[in-house]
Image 1 (cartoon, rainbow, N blue to C red):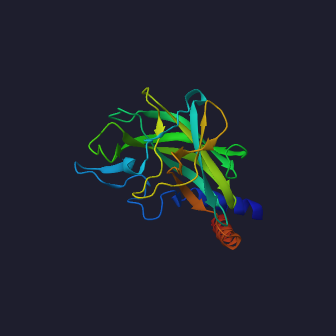
Image 2 (spheres, rainbow, N blue to C red; image 1 turned 90 degrees about the vertical axis):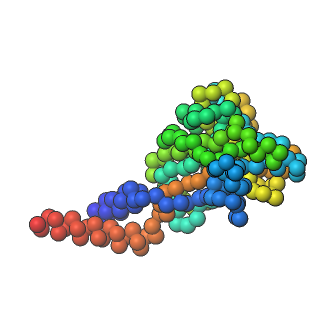
Image 3 (tube, helix red, strand yellow; image 1 turned 45 degrees about the horizontal axis):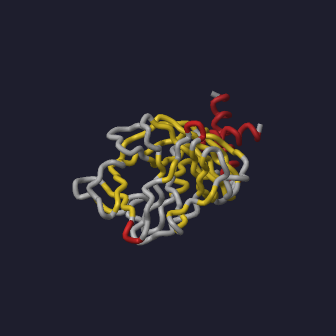
Length: 248
């Protein structure tokens, strides 16, 4: 009976409103996406590629169709664990004027190396919206060719114990370009993380722009696993409620 109550309590927690568990944006970033660096004079925001400092890459290939290209980045789960319900990503297809992403591949793997981590869970495409963020260079800030799309991915209440994990992903779209994965972007910061990329199903290798390692933006939402004492208290409350209903 006690185990049944605890499972019921965990299910109630998983069904609760999601909260932010992980935000990959760098401290001091312009906004919480980890991509925008300034406001756009014509409205919206800009994600500026700093060519003056030698940066050259708008985005990294992340086309999941036929395993063409995938990217990966790690995250850390704190105690006592997480219940993952959804994740958010950003991508673009050059020339898109409306949403063009229609699916993709999303995996959570163990450890910080996508080449050796074991599969924990897969996500499913939840939807896409067109953002007001444009990926541009510092010399062509009026360019509108690379408007970012925000992709929501659903996970089925995945229970993660404390530790390090890697998110592996790629997108599919309706246009020939990409899809492309823009890196974390912060004005004045060239080394933004330790992400990976796999091409044509090959081994994952570190993502760099020149000699600068790059990180990738993503959010994870869900619930923190309740402490055991809280679970027991919640379970006791459920049991008391069931007992009252039976007496009624």
